[in-house]
Image: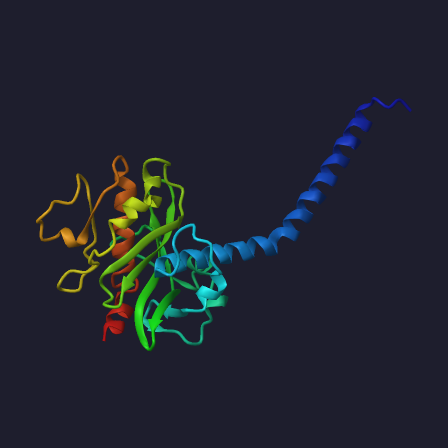
Length: 255
C-alpha cells in the first residue's frame, strides 16, 4: 500500500495525539502531590509573613516555624470556634460554592461581592503563652478583574492592623497589581480597623490621607489609577471584619 495516503496520515496524527495525551496525563498525575505540597508550603509562608514570623523572600524552615501557629475553625454563623471541624479537612473555596456548606448573601450584606459565604473558615492564632499575640484572618473579595485572596493580621487588641497581604489575584500589573507592593502594604500597619462604636471603619482614600484628619487612623491612600481595586480592598476588609465575617468572634476574643 502507498504510504502517503489520507488514512495513514490520520493514523499517524491519532497515534501522536494518544502518545502525547498519555505523557501529559502521566505527568499531571505524577506531579500532583508535589503541586499540593508546594501549595500548602506557599500558604504557610504567607501566614507566617502575616504573623510577623517571616520576612517576604526569607529562607527558613517554614514547617518548623508554622508549629508556633494555632489553626482554628470558626463557625461564621455563630462566631464560635468549631472544635469538631478539622482545618485540614476544610476546603473553603469548594464550600463557598456548595449551597449545603455556605450561606447566600443579600445585596446589602454582600459588600465583598462574593455572593455566598462559607459556613466555616479557618483562622490562625499566634500566642504568647496563653495570651493571643496576633490573629491572622483569611479575607477575599472582588477587585476590578478578579477575586483577591489575602490575609489581614490584627494585634492582640483585635483592632490594630499589623499586616495586610494578598497571595492570589488577577488585577492589572502596575495598577491594581500594586496591592502586592510592600510600600503600599506598609501603610496599613498601625491602622485601626474599628471606630469607637466597634463598627468596621476602614477607608481607602482617593487623593491621599489628610494629616490631622481625625479619621486618618482608619484611612489608607488609594492606589493611583486603580480606584476599583482600592475600593474592593476596602469593601472586603469591612465585610470580613463585620458582622457577616469575623466581627462576632473578634468581639468575644477581646474579652
